[in-house]
Image (cartoon, rainbow, N blue to C red; front, side, top):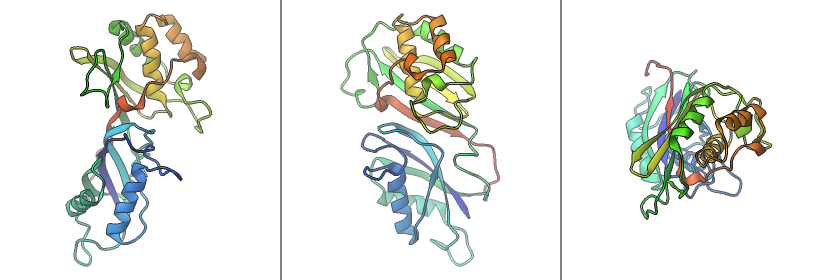
Amino acid sequence: MRYFITLSYDGTRFHGWQVQPNGISVQGELQRALSLLLRQDVAVTGAGRTDTGVHARMMVAHFDFNGEWGAGSGERMDGRQLAYKLNRILPQDIAVQRVEQVPDDMHARFSALARTYYYYIHTFKSPFLRHYSCELHYDLDFPLMNQAAAILLEYDDFGAFCKSHADVKTTLCHMMKAEWREVEPGQWCFEIQANRFLRNMVRAVVGTLVEVGRHRLTLDDFRRVIEGKRRTEAGESMPAKALFLQHIAYPEFRHI
């Protein structure tokens, strides 16, 4: 039987989602807790891989389990009870929202239709934003940055924003949304949505848009960066602490 786990986490102290040989990971913590509760080794597959220091307001992972837990013989697993127990075991910076049985052909990664990321910038010193937003004091031209962001939707190859030497078979992505909005005076959020993202892609896109906002790149320059498909031509990667995996969309399915 296959189960989806919906969770959120503060990525500050983790070496990303994926299990690492010499670092603590969200996937590793989740597998440890599940294996302890279900009394067998459990492997989880995530919807994607967030990098070191990146947060997730919504991550989805799946695992397979055919034994009995928290229910009588022949009954399905009690997802609410398992979520409660997981939250008792997991560290405070990981929270499980729900566990639910799904059809066996559902896959946390490959069944996802779209992923949405938020990146936060603030333009003043703040002791309360410093851990989850990037402080910049440049005179940024956000209307121009939005014009550049709209250009992203005209393309489908984002090799210019992919981390060098990344092990990817394709740099094609279907971009659905890319825009800046001011959430509070001096606080801005960049929302970007696509069917998939390349490694380090969002932070590289933001870094390049900041170059546009500083008038160091024109809109034509921005197009040339995309069309050139060379990471060295794009802007610097922005700090991970301000990036959040916000939402993952799936097709409607019959809950079991």
